[in-house]
Structures are given as C-alpha cells and as structure tokens.
Image (cartoon, rainbow, N blue to C red; front, side):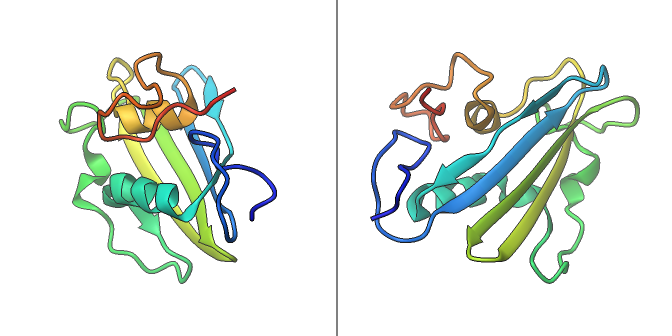
Length: 137
C-alpha cells in the first residue's frame, strides 16, 4: 500500500506513486504550479489527455507536435504573447516525460489542466466530464 493517497479522490492504492508537476506561466509573470501524487490509473488518464503536448520522453526523443503553435484553448495559431503550459511527469521510477503547450492570454486552459492545477471551480470530483477532477484539499 502506498504511504500517501492518490491526489485525486484521495484513495489508497498499491504500488509506487507516479508524480506530475504541472505549471501555467502567464505573460504577467503569475504562475500556477502544483505537485500531484498519482496512482497508476490516474497517471494513465493524465498522460492520455496531455499526450498531444508531449515534448520529450526520458530519452529526449519525440517529434515536435503539430499543435506546438496552436492554442490549447481555442486551437487557433498563436504568434504573439502567450501563456505557457509546462508539465513534467514521472510515471514510474526515474522515467521522465515533459509536456509543453501555449494559450492565448484570454483563452482558458482545457478543463483537465485547470482541474489538475486546482484553478477551476468547474472541475470537481465526480463531475463526469472526462477529465481529472480537482485535487482535494
């Protein structure tokens, strides 16, 4: 049994914890950061949702995503000042994956990312919207 519960729905689980370190950095310099300890099932869900923004795996080998210049919120081209999304995950042991994306300053992040960062009141546990629920406090 893991020492600490999963950050989502605070349930206990067997096995090693996976870790996610997401951040949104806005043009104003404001940062939203968080560390989440995840069970294997929630890490798999997160990696599926964040998959299009994978920038590098443990070997540093990933083709740049065609979404690299598209807003995560509205899917339109971003060519000026933007909010940046960064996330590093450790899905198992020392294995590392890095994610990167951009947003227009006026666009909202995808619901799964807001829920992961705990910045959206609309992302609550059990809402059934198909994204990770907000971390319990």
